[in-house]
Image 1 (tube, one colour):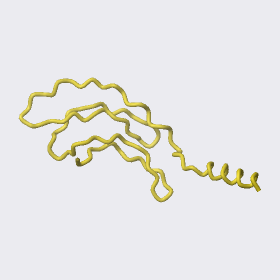
Image 2 (cartoon, helix red, strand yellow):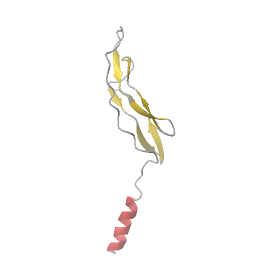
Image 3 (tube, one colour):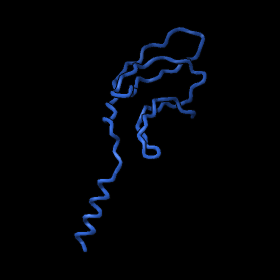
Image 4 (spheres, one colour):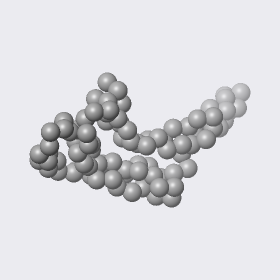
Length: 95
């Protein structure tokens, strides 16, 4: 009985959903340059990894207009929805 229970626990552990894609690489250390002189308020958008369908590509950091962007930056990640793995791109989050 104990062996059957142990086998059940081990088999359930094998059912953990792991993405079929490689892990997201560590973020690079992008130095933040001085912002350009402009009358528009700017935010620094950090560099981040994007998934191009077959590999990760680095998108370097850049200044973007503050208008229309949330207060927090969320790097990209993999999520599983209805049994399908989907890349959630990096984006600004309202905060």
